Image (cartoon, rainbow, N blue to C red; front, side, top):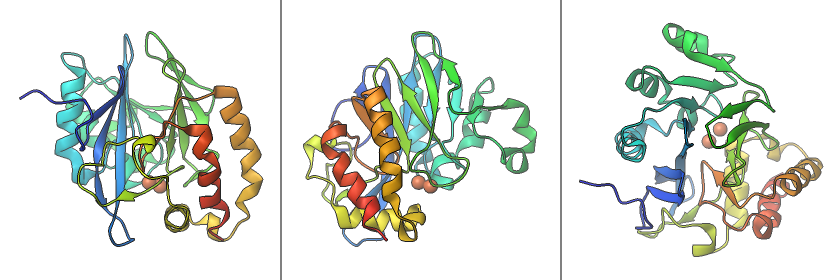
Length: 254
Ligand SMILES: [Fe+2]
Ligand SMILES: [Fe+2]
């Protein structure tokens, strides 16, 4: 059976010719809403990188989708954006399935979890790049981060900014909306984003988040992204239009 990469109402969906959005949705802590647990496979002309591993609950689906999208090519890099289950829980599975794949990211603790695979970890820092053949995938500091090992990523060819836990937004529990872009559903709901940010990031409850806004504005102005890919929300195809809502979701959580 061939995998359908077009918009069908469920993941996967091809968001650019080289980038596949897959993963799945799980009931959120807010009744009636779903939370995405997404990952993204970026296929360059020479090498590929899986951004976040997918949640272990979705292992079969993610494996089906990335295998179909890779075709006869191997997976070259896996980039867990930080060391939490939805972002990194399938790292061992992918490294064993693709024996030449290398894990890239802030791998500072991973020798403790997977000591037998530590020779396949590559430590990177913001500013480092992965040469995928037709683009230099670039690691960025995670301005709105979860853990100290969080990193963001940037695809300069398709102008996609990968944001890990930032810019998360739930979508209504309506069948057939899991693969929609933000322009195809109702705008993100600020109280729901506050709830998510207080539980997933914690610091917005205790800290004045507004001090981080200038850094985010500067990053967006420099990169001019076309798409924002959060692990926990619809793919954002209106980055500048929706940024005030994402800021409100952080600033008002205290
Ligand atoms: Fe997280
Ligand atoms: Fe997360």
